[in-house]
Image 1: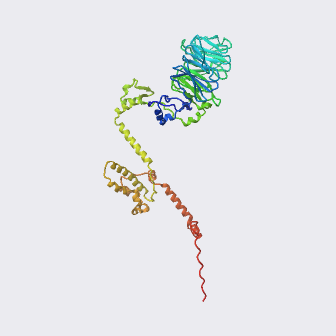
Image 2: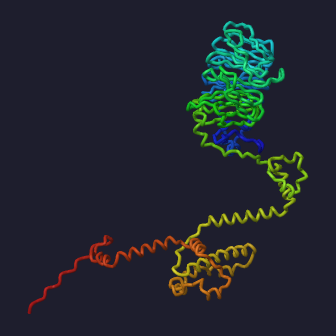
Image 3: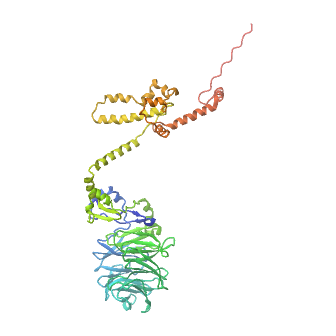
Amino acid sequence: MGDDDTFSGLRVSAPNGVKVYQVTGGKQVPKWLSETNKRKLRKDADYQRRIELVQDLEFSTASSRVRLSGDGNFLAVTGIHPPQVKVYDLSQLSMKFERHLDAEVVDFDILSDDYSKMAFLCADRSVVFHAKFGNYYKTRFPRQGRAIAYAEHTGDLVVVGSTHEVYRLNLEQGRFLSPLETNATGVNCARVSSTHGLLACGTENGTVECFDLRSRERLGGGLRVCAGGAEGSGDGVTAVRFDPSGMRLATGDAEGKVRLYDLRSSRPLFTKDHMNGFKIVDVRWHSASDGHKRIISADTRVVRAWEPDTGKAYTSVEPGDEINDVCVWDGTGLIVTAMETKRLGVHFVPSLGAAPSWCSFLENITEEMEEEAAPSIYDDYKFVTREELTRLGMDNLIGTNMLRAYMHGFFVDNRLYGKAKAIAEPFSYEEYKQKKVEEKLAQELATRIVVKRKAPKVNAALVARLEKGETAADRKRKGRKKGGADTHEDTDDEDEGAGAILEDDRFARMFEDADFEVDEDDDAYRALHPNAPKLSKREREEMLEEHFDLDDDDDDDENEGAVAEDGPGELDDDDDDGDDGDGPEPEPEPDPEPELEP
């Protein structure tokens, strides 16, 4: 595997201060990888931190649509090249089966609570029905379809596409019904409300038309949402969704705007702009575990969560690839995206809700395996200003593809920057080496264990200065040894130092008797030592703390004061008692012999 290969680990980002965990993403281990190479990966940190929430949640090229079954136990995903569908058993965290189709799937819907009944709208104008055992029935429609919707209360399968007609196939009667007529040249999306059964169709003319499937008449004159696009372009309204109450409708258009409507009014309650110009793929009404309601809207680049009343952004999810579809578990924080890449994106937002019951362990491992947030600037590029470009002699590259203009400077490839800097500053590498050596020496000095002795009563600053000079002499001595110099003189120098002077009885009174104290502020001392450094009181205290253990001196002073307070009288009383608890009792003296009378 190459150096650029990465494994799917738990990455975390915090847009708007809300943590978003990327549960899957990156590169998986190839199935054809040899056992030897697999054993080598055991030491790879990224491989050890990888997470595969659902086994084989990937396709050979890309995934197009993703749906969740009504009971929440199965996830169905369609992919392309080759056209296929995969159904995953979420309770087992694995794939249940995969099936191949004759044409690419444009849209599909799950007709039952589980995976036993599914309808696939294919690119060859056909609708294929699948049962538990496999392919069940196939039929064709007159025009190319773009979306499919199923009305449970009437049993109608609705297909919309590049025509003004809305086709209906009644699955209970097993026959086509008369199509519904719209005022548009084409219909992009359709959605049926589970509350009152209304069918909302988003057209490429920029309108939303609602129908009651029990009659063939359109309700009202249509809702003008946005400007329409050219015929056959697929622009206009690209997503519609009713809220659980059935009284509000969310729409998304090809310009990246989401509008919220009350069915009783033609004026939008609120308009949210994604500010990127990409078309809206899907809109969801989401209820968090605490009951708070938000809107989750997805365009082809980003999934945004925001407040429906104020439009305030809550958080966003950026998978990094083009988004084709999105699936959100209501009441939880799990979001699955089908994208133009092999692997599906799975993101977990704990603040939106707890993890679903089938992956409740996700809450425990998010904090444990959390990775550091990825930097916002690519590591392969270096940001330089225009002045730095001139100094490096690279200003002639402005306007070429070697430089990427950004804010007040440019992004340049790290390799090109390194070569240009080596030519413009040939001695910078030597300075870098010298700096690294100094940092290493400072680190070794900081980690060295220094035994601090008790400070002498007199001339402690003199002893500290001698020890400081002795440390410098040791460094010079090591340098002479590396250079091959004679080491006999060094042996003599090692005997001379602050420690030897303190242990020598000839100099004992110099560090005990106050008459021998050296007054560095005296004029006579300054005259004899004109180059001696004049230290402030703070610097002198720091030097003493560096070489001596001053805490022991304080403890000794306290002990001496305590003994003085006790006084000699108490000690005499203890001696009179005789028994101090440490030795045997003394034997009694014998009685004196009686004197004889004459």
